[in-house]
Image (cartoon, rainbow, N blue to C red; front, side):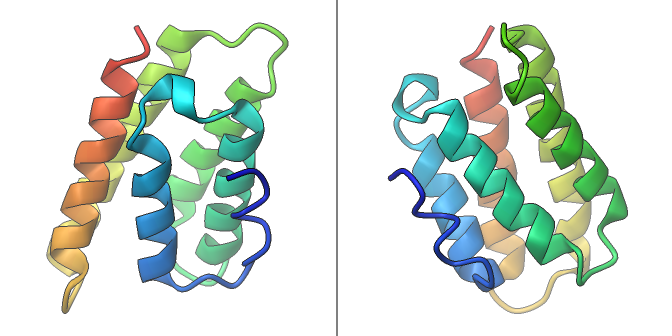
Length: 117
């Protein structure tokens, strides 16, 4: 899975959501911090073209937390839970298939975060 995310910097929203959920499927031990950083970079690139400044800011915090020499799981958990809440706020605004996908993504973020601490 390494570098899978950075190979597609212009991934569409569906692919990015699916990639994120797939990364979380195996729990915290199945994804490296490097893979997480690559995925965060893809999200940040995607969010530059939208009005999602708050989510981008939270992703920057997550990125910084994952780059620490000693990763604080409680801090990462809290950031992921915040991302889940922010994602859920986008559900009512999304159209088409996106409400269900965003809700699933929020659930995956919450479940993954809760496994950390």
